[in-house]
Image 1 (cartoon, rainbow, N blue to C red):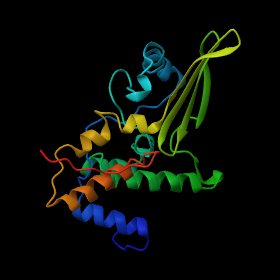
Image 2 (cartoon, rainbow, N blue to C red; image 1 turned 120 degrees about the horizontal axis):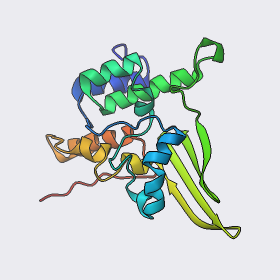
Image 3 (cartoon, one colour; image 1 turned 45 degrees about the vertical axis):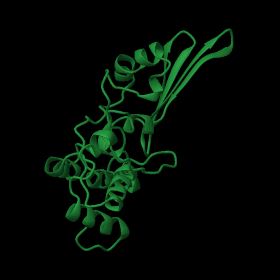
Image 4 (cartoon, rainbow, N blue to C red; image 1 turned 120 degrees about the vertical axis):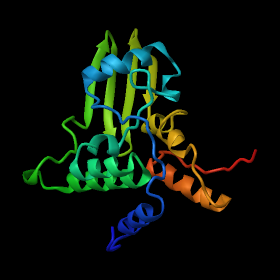
Length: 209
């Protein structure tokens, strides 16, 4: 970062120098999304609540999904987390770290940053199944239930819904953000949003009391 040889290095150097705590959130990162863990903590809530996808939770609590959750135990990311917390800068490092791992030749070490397969599919009941996919943005879930050969129920939980939960990492990370003026506040909030990589177009609006 200090050499500023690439655009990501320049951004990281600036974040660490001027806003090392931007987007800092105390929301836990998502544990390993094994089939058994999902069956215990997430699938029952999906089945019971049609609106689960609007504000998904892990065992009843919001969590952060994505590269930071998957690489948080790696030495570089863990060291930065210990120093700065779960911030925009650390999320950028996690994403770059994961990208580097994926580009490693298979004989140089594990290609994935976690032990889980990127794509899982499993039955959760008669004529009912869940697909769990680790995407660049985080965990994507699809749940389908059939009845008489037709789709009777279908749910999609996108990574953005985890990270942009009303009490999730973005909301918690923006709470208390200070800025000298409105333009600086919009810039800071935009960086915090982009560090979590929403899957839809977005804009930042500032309201005044």
